[in-house]
Image (tube, rainbow, N blue to C red; front, side, top):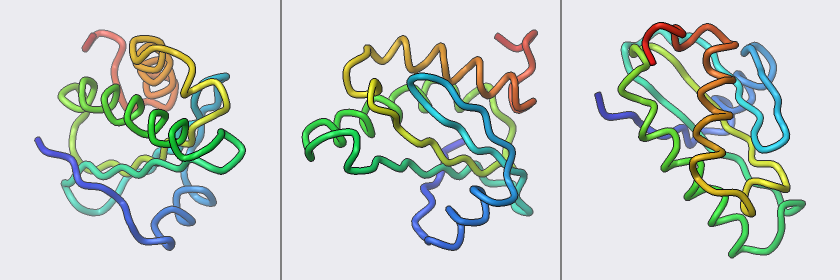
Length: 114
């Protein structure tokens, strides 16, 4: 299933206030069921992370990690991934394992699906 991206500010705010969250040193994940059968995600990188090059790398690494995991996720979820300062300095595999742990903690991925 191909995922869609969240672009509206109201969608991001809805996840921040009503979604469940899991935080780590590399990534913060917000997850919430949606009413559609679509898998939607958004990525936030603030100026605290660094200049445009670092922010773009953080987004690219998060997007690559999520694309590997989206096959394990059933439709009907919205996600917002918030990059941390370390995100642009670690490898994609690190982000992938942290993201997988956080999604398991939030009940999105079952541990026996891995």
